Amino acid sequence: MDRYSQIDNKNQREIVLLKGFPCIWGKCSFCDYIEDNSTLEYEMNKLNFDVLKNITGKYKVLEVINSGSCFELPKATLEKIKEIIKEKKIEKLFLESHWCYKNRLKEMRDYFEIPIVFKIGVESFDYDFRNKFLNKNAKFKTPEDVKKYFDSPCMMVGIKGQTKEMIDKDMEIVLKYFNHATINIFINNTTKLERDDSLVAWFKEKYEFLNNNENIEVLYNNTDFGVGD
Image (cartoon, rainbow, N blue to C red; front, side, top):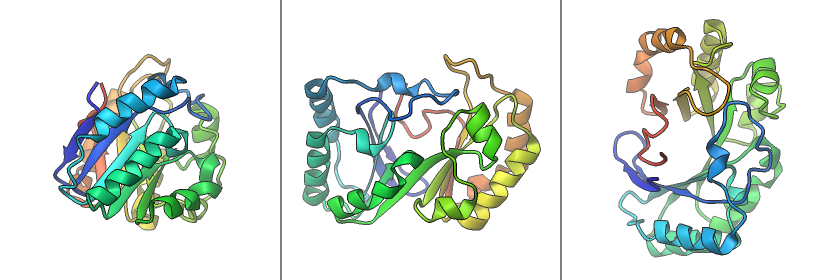
C-alpha cells in the first residue's frame, strides 16, 4: 500500500493516505475503501506518523486523505499534521469529509489555521442515483447546498445504471459552480457494482478536454494520485 506521493502536474502538492477510525456512514454501495480503517488507535498513529515523516513541504501544499472523513483521524495524528504544517511551512491543505460533517468544517479550518480546500464525495448530483443506487446518504438538493460548505466535489463516472444524461448534467454543474473537482472513473472492486466500459469510453472521448483544465483532476485509475493499492 503506497501512502505517500507527490502530485507534480495539476495543483502540485504532496499527498498522504492515512488510517482513521471507521467511516461514520460506511454503507456506500460502491465503496470497499473503508476496509483500510481501524479501531486500534496506537497502531494507527504509529503508521500515520511514519507516513507523515515523508512530507518535505516541497510545494507548500498538502493533501491528507483516509478511508472516510478527516474527522475520523486520531487526535494524535491531527496534532502531528498540525506540527508538520508549521515545521514545513505548508500554506494550503486539502481535506475530505462526508456530507454529515458539513456543520463541523469550521473546526478544522480553525484548528489548522491555514486555507483548506474541502473535498466531498458527491459522486452524482442526481439525487436518486446518489442516495438510492449508490446509498451515499448525502441528501442535499442543489449544487448551491454543496457549495455553501465544500470547495471541491468528487464525482463518479462509469457505473452500470448511470446514464450519459446524468454525467452530462454532473459535468455541467461542476464546471459552472466549482473552482476545483475530481472525476473518478469507476474501477471494478469487491462490491456488487459493475463498471460500464462503453460509458467510460464515451466519457473519455467527449470530456477529453477536461485533461487540459487545470482545476479538474480526472482519475482514470484509483491510484492515479500515487497512493492506494
